[in-house]
Length: 348
Image 1 (tube, rainbow, N blue to C red):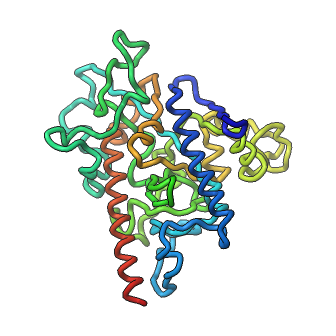
Image 2 (image 1 turned 90 degrees about the vertical axis):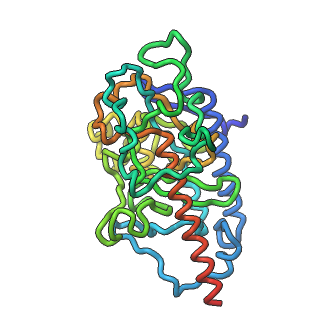
Image 3 (image 1 turned 180 degrees about the horizontal axis):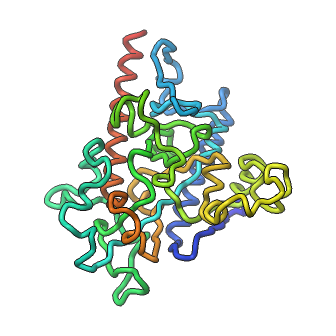
């Protein structure tokens, strides 16, 4: 491992990080680095998913224009991407808990978790589940994030199944997908500031949650921001944060005009230890791989296991269902891509 590949991890004290998480982070970071290298070597400083798109674009085909100040629309599915935008891609993390075993748990009531937010607008794809006779079981493995033996430690239930894994920090309405060239491939895009968005195919496009001119994509909202309670970074990434991405720099001393003479009082603890600085102020775009083996290694365990009893029930969803909803959006994006290709061929 080179000096630039060595990783620093900073997490809040009730988050479990394993070697699997670190290795997965480094692998996805390396994929992003390879894409950036390809883009910088290209005559147009871009990478292209499809040669057809590269050589056969039609300016007469209308693209979505956002209403929230973003520089790109919500219909970015397989578009070329510039090297500067690739640099702003960053492997994200998603906090999860394991449903405790108490039979009186409100989330164990029949039908509670199956009625998660937007389950009708974006039903989970069957591709996210095992084939019959196990079709109700997610293809994700809970072990990389959340395995625990018996007797368990603290508040962590032993031997969790994938159906026991819950999330509450975001939902499908705040999520998009995008296809990148290999080695990155299909990703899910977590919420990002409107002015920082490098583009994705939003789950609400074109009218899933209502007319596009009336429904805004959730951006920096507390209910969907996907607080990840920390971050990982390589030495090279930290150098990029400090020298390029982050206004006022990433590392101390915080003496530039940006900090207005008092860096600590202006921000919450989540800004410093939770990663908010990176995906807010520094304009990084967090991505989740849609490869199931990688996706499950971007889940991190909140071992206090208390949000499932304090967060509103309507916010809670099974991780397997959320992954299935992302795959449903991917299917809709693939259909959008195919329809675009047919339109381009007709315009020739």
